[in-house]
Length: 327
Image 1 (cartoon, rainbow, N blue to C red):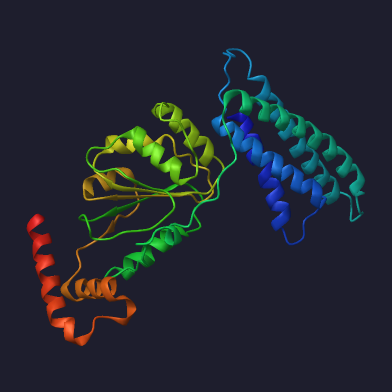
Image 2: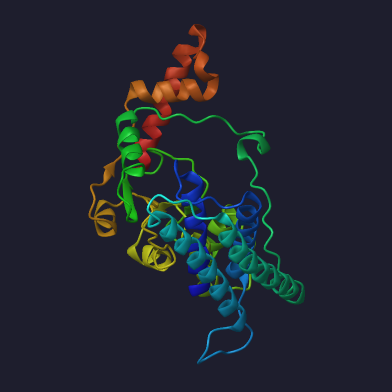
């Protein structure tokens, strides 16, 4: 984990310099590209890499090399930033920075080469496939809209985009079918949950292909490494017990970067145990909103034709009465 954290730190510095309106130093474009490519590759490699040997006293040699190279890159960049800031307005020659980074990049190239050989030996691959657009790949996909809970949607957006940097748990309480959200990583828990299947599902949505023979701890470690240092949003849908939460919570790192976890549940007392923040309470739709949702679902934004409105409302009322009987 030290190796992965060191790589994340290097990427943070590179990103900060890239986004800063007036950076104290500038990296050579080719060097910035090489560093980014090497660091990204090694991050992906570490997510699936498990040393075969038992290094009880010392770190794995390859991971140690990654740590040293990452720290060297970080020290070089930071020292040149300090030199530039403390140079009393003088311009520091970029040659020394370029030459120093060239050595680090060569070291990372060698590490990357060794990592690729390990990939071939172990039969693993860190190259990620491009995420598919589910709205285009599914012939039945439709645009979704929020009906009857617009104020809760605004409150949810406020919680998701707030300035708080610590990891926030956002409980949503309501009966089944009272609301839905669409995000890239969404795990359905339900009453009979399976931690292993849940982790495989989440990793699959994050484009991480894993073996079915990995246990919960192995899958959780891959998830933790993948999320470590990244800003993420995970939805855990329809949670029924605190045990299900405890089974996955330890694999969701608090990166202090504004990550969010949304938990939907039917149980108010469970939501209170998940977070100290105020729960979002979802209520069932009234007749007006129910008809609005049915009409938009069947006919889109154009709405229901006048000649079908009467029978449509009768269908909506029967469906609503049936839902109430189930509750």
